Amino acid sequence: MSFSPVLALVRARVRTRDVFIEIRGIIPGALLEVLRLEYGCRVIESMDVEKPMQDVLSAPLYEREPQQMRPGDFLRFYRCKKGLTQSELCKELGGLYRQNISGMEGGKRPIGKRMASKLAGFFGVSPSRFLC
Image (cartoon, rainbow, N blue to C red; front, side, top):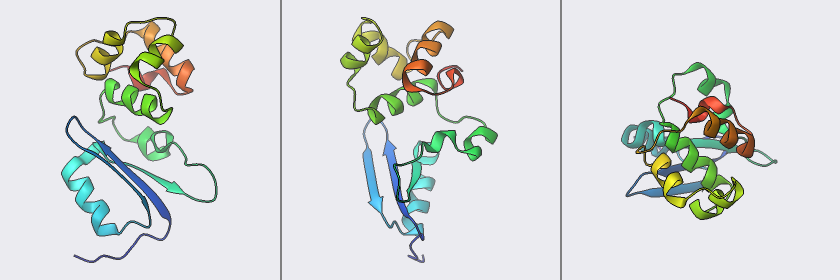
């Protein structure tokens, strides 16, 4: 395996039930490939280029490709990106129960159209991120 680094500063993030990995800096291409092979669609990559990180989920690649993450995965990603706990998100959304957010993130509770619109407005993304 070749360990040639990518040319830009990169941030790679993986979060599963048992694993949380976040790497920042010049990441060797081989390491990114290993993460992609092991974790597939759960690897979220973004570039650091003299400005705040872009939301890689709104990149054209993700608009063209079929969505591989579940709606609950997007909810968890955006919640963590804002640095909110489930309880804090509930308060922001108007007094939901934490178990509701937990169930949505875990895929045990569906995210309805009304809730998807509420989440999309709060996070500033398309409601389709939260719908199957």
